Structure formats: structure tokens, C-alpha cells
Image (cartoon, rainbow, N blue to C red; front, side, top):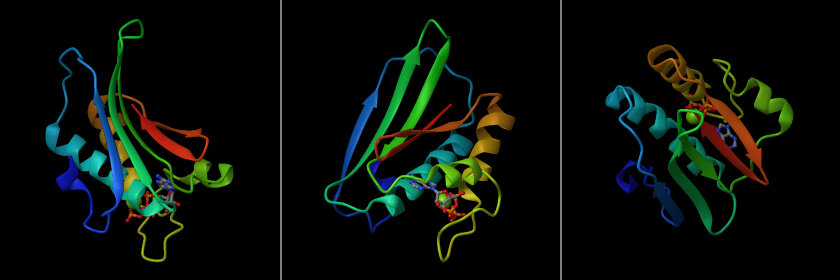
Length: 129
Ligand SMILES: Nc1ncnc2c1ncn2[C@@H]1O[C@H](COP(=O)(O)OP(=O)(O)OP(=O)(O)O)[C@@H](O)[C@H]1O
Ligand SMILES: [Mg+2]
């Protein structure tokens, strides 16, 4: 996981927590790419020391759902931005393309028939599917 973090992410505390889950049919390449995009967003959102990123795989047996969570303690998103975050071309970055989340959502929803959301904890952001 750590080798996936951009080099700029020197002083980031990464917490990984992976539950035992039943076999899930997925494309490793596409999913890896989607998670990489979430990590890259998380790193660029960090604005305090220590920056923290949590990556978790969680199993909710009753719902028959496996969640993949990428969460950071960075600046978070204004509610208005959150409604647009997944739209292609939406970016608040000077050099952003605004494509990461749009494509990650496609990977999750179209290739895996799963769902993706962003959630706002106190100054945190998670993506679940
Ligand atoms: N973890 C996060 N914390 C705060 N804001 C975020 C986070 N992830 C995404 N965003 C917001 O959503 C916008 C869209 O993200 P997205 O990944 O689609 O595009 P981008 O990162 O701006 O550009 P790129 O195409 O290079 O990924 C970002 O510009 C940022 O404003
Ligand atoms: Mg991005």
C-alpha cells in the first residue's frame, strides 16, 4: 500500500485495517487504479500534521456488503463541492483534471455493479462501495 502513496506523502500516518471478507469478484487492475486515485486525493487534501489516511476493508455480513474505505483527516469538502465531486471536470485544484473520482465511480458502478459514496465525518472523507 505504502509504495502506492505519492512521494510527496512523506509524513503521513497510514492506518490499514483489513477484515476477513468472503471472495469478491473484481478486477484487480481497475480497483487498484481507483484506490490509487482516492489515495492521491487524500494526500493532496492533507493540511495538518500529522496527516492521517485510513484504508480499510470492512465486511457487513447482514447487508452482504464489503466496504472499501479511504479516509483522510484533511481539509474535507464543502457540502456544495461534495455534490459535484464525482462530476467529470469538477476540480478545485490548479492542475486538476477533475477526472479521478468520475472514473473511479465508473469503475465501481459500471464494472463492478457496486455503489460509491463520499461521507463526511468531522474533517474526514471516505469513499465506500
Ligand atoms: N479526499 C478529499 N478531500 C477533500 N476534497 C477532495 C477529496 N477527494 C476529492 N476532493 C475534491 O473533489 C475534487 C474532484 O476530485 P477528482 O479526483 O475527481 O479530481 P482532481 O483530484 O481535482 O483531479 P484529477 O483528475 O487529477 O484526479 C477535487 O478537486 C477536490 O476538490
Ligand atoms: Mg484526483
